Image 1 (cartoon, one colour):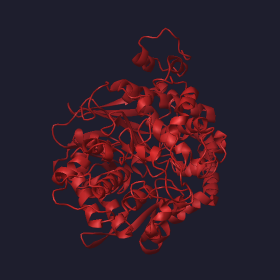
Image 2 (cartoon, rainbow, N blue to C red):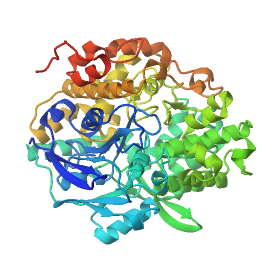
Image 3 (cartoon, rainbow, N blue to C red):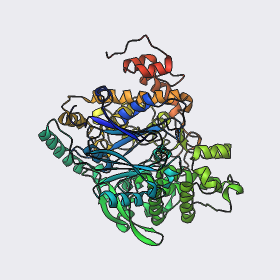
Image 4 (cartoon, rainbow, N blue to C red):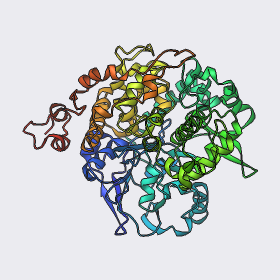
Length: 630
């Protein structure tokens, strides 16, 4: 087995209570690198089309990358792949912290969870192997309680990934939480974990990955740390964390106010929930993922049931979703809402999106009294926000039950006017990047395999610096020319390859240091690669995910932005009058991808070029075309 990999994964059949180790296939490594690349391929090969996300045949696949747990800057990330309860299509989530590296230290590159336990269970993973244990006393506990109790029982050195009550209750937007505040959240992985009655995975290892050239790894890491510390973007993240991005969004005209109805310039309370205010009045200390010199995480002062507590976060996405989108200008309320989402185990982006949607529907009189059951949910009402978060997590009351399925489901039950207020793609609520302001983001959202996400694509040079390794200079955010080609490069490199390597975008993408990844990969594994090799692996993974969705009936007709982005321009700010124009770029995007313009599916020829014979057969039947590779 090549260096940087443990060489094995563990398969856990919860239905039969069987655990078995399996060698990690060398061809998977060669074709998909690791992380979400390998996880997506296993998911495609093993999950039959047409099943429910909560069917025991669905799988929950955790994978690290070759740079996860390696002494390089920000080699902390792991990915999860599954069929999503939010979309009924491909689902993916990634997270940082220390859990992913600890899994590598225990000797495993990944975990494939299948089946469904008869009663709540946990997995305990150490150097000695994997055990399935009873989790009855933990069922119903929040994520913080679960982590603390497992560490009391097993030892504080154990790292824990777990679900909260939202996952247990199969709330579609529920997350998997690790390290007291890191979240694998998007697309609903916590609900899939809950459907399998798997409460937590506790890991502890003592091994370290073997390196092909340890001295070169150390030298490269030293250089990268120095460059990151000097980069303005990394300096901002170090000083204010991702909340430092919040006020900057006004300069590029983001409509992250009142459920995407207003520009940030129209929100007078914005200064009260920005990064500077967080630092000044609420910051306790900075927090870091494994091996990260940036330390963008925040530990802040919060209040829970009238008691002062230390909490993790919030991040930029949470600040916008639970703050300005809901017209909530109270930092105290926003911190509490973020903390509740974390301990209940819910995606803050989707939760904020569904609450903002509900508040708009309430204002417009679109929520019938039988749903409200006497409740009032006006804009910016902190008590109403907290009540809705709890109601959604517990599926309590008619409104809580409806909203627990997300804005797509809720809007379809409320009618056409409500559907115009529902901001989602393929059922996943939009992350806090406005596709009216940055047209490349709109195309990224529309064609995203897992919905409107910020971790699967997006043209960052529209609002930030260049991506030198990809040959992309800073771009006009309002233009649509040349965006499809740029997006494809970024999707293949950042979303697929970087998520497969196990490194953080902030450390390598924001700082424009992706060009160092081939050298790092060679120093760790001994395999000589170039950026184009990473792009090929990313393209292969992206196409596997696309075919997964095609099997479920998804195609061009689902590659659309919501009504609000295409028909409702902002009335003020630096993006005044703009709408999302993703539809105008689809044909060019499909052409450059090698996809059929009518269906939006990869062509037989493209799949053959990528050596994806099984995927080709899934769409077109047995193929006589020879694949490029033997």
